[in-house]
Image 1 (cartoon, helix red, strand yellow):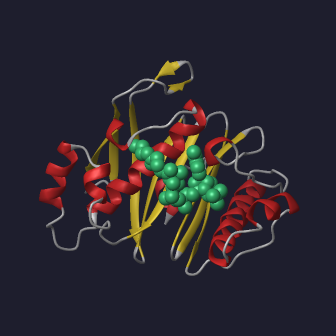
Image 2 (spheres, rainbow, N blue to C red; image 1 turned 180 degrees about the vertical axis):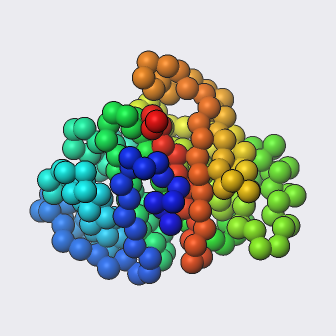
Length: 219
Ligand SMILES: CC(C)(COP(=O)(O)OP(=O)(O)OC[C@H]1O[C@@H](n2cnc3c(N)ncnc32)[C@H](O)[C@@H]1OP(=O)(O)O)[C@@H](O)C(=O)NCCC(=O)NCCS
């Protein structure tokens, strides 16, 4: 499903179901040594996915270590993003240039826990959700909103290196196109020398999983 919402020059790999795990490099083992088994498996599974993407782009198998703020460190010449949730793990990696940043996020297609929406949604987003959330057969828009913001953050942080608050990115979904527009209320994001305040993303839903993607710099 992830491949459907990414540009053709971005490689992706995904796993549905329980994270199977996989072989880690010793440097990665060290980082995850004290984690519980479920965290270890998801950490390993996304890295297997990421290395599959790297291989398709002609890159050697390398450790993918968490860097500043948790952002994954990619080999020179690529950008990427990883996500995992119960029942799903995925990675997306693309050549830089033209890709400047990638953010992907997966969430279960279930309502957000009580109280979370008020923290993450702007007043305008809450007003729109009050209408769309009622539509039968639609995704859980509150969760999709949360996911879109996480994807924005994962694209934003490696370029800017600063926190982005949920209230600083306003999401407007197009339910028919399965796209979303992002309006940032603060400066900081610069792509190819140009300050960026507006981004675009895409989303998909399959097998009880919602996935969102924001890619900067693709043709
Ligand atoms: C970092 C964060 C986005 C991760 O999202 P999540 O839904 O908790 O978890 P996911 O499984 O989808 O993603 C985890 C992966 O994100 C990546 N990641 C972590 N921190 C990151 C960062 N600062 N920048 C980019 N990617 C990051 C890592 O690859 C991580 O996997 P790993 O720990 O196995 O290496 C989230 O925990 C967070 O801090 N959110 C608050 C900030 C935010 O979203 N603001 C909204 C702005 S509009």
